[in-house]
Image (cartoon, rainbow, N blue to C red; front, side):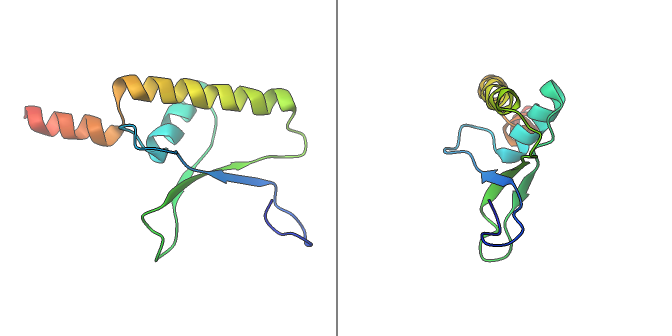
Length: 98
């Protein structure tokens, strides 16, 4: 939670633990395309611009069932991306074939 001792913003920020041939932007796109989730990816500001994070806003009305569903959908999207690769991997493959 952002904003301790103030109005709090129920925000969860996270990033992928390893380079698996896809990145947070690929995961955000896959989650949107497969399941309709809007979990955006961002690069951090200057001096940390090489770090990419994802952000999930968790409303008070979000149930545990929805949280579990999001976690499962993230796992499925990662499985799909592990098989097909991310956009940059795909783009590099297209460039090599040309």
